[in-house]
Image (cartoon, rainbow, N blue to C red):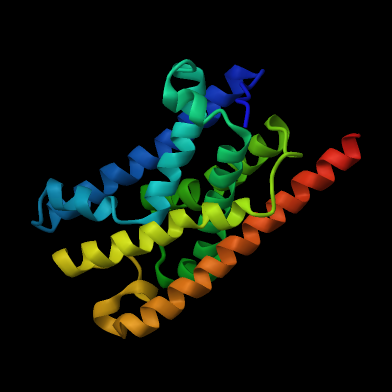
Length: 215
């Protein structure tokens, strides 16, 4: 799909700065916590990079930053595409929904942790969805796209399982193969993938409705 470059670049820069701030704040807090507990900064970074939330917020940061900072590069052109931004929008919407339904009651962050938590799971997802909705043409989105986008959470699950088997630590309880076994982990993974597909199909449907309304 043809790339789209935002007209209001000041607003996009502000959104990118907000998204990067949340991501880097959580990195700082994770590293600081692990150093305080005697595990070291490197272990903190390893743990940080294991979360779907972090990797997806990083995708958001790249989608907001590269088309502005490096529009002529392969990365800039890739993240300027409408279908790519629809994929990122689906992924970050999934982050917000899964966190709200499955994880928010498992801990009670305070102070800077609460700020990072809110930015990563609520503010950035909502801001990017609005950015996608008002910036990109959606009429060419196909019903098959969400199933292609589903390769991302599928690859992530494989990554998390291999990584967990090596280091003995899993980012989420519902994919903790050591605690709940591989069968339950795979069942949970398939269920979450189905939710991801449904979210993607909803965004495609809304995009098509937007095109019809504008016609």
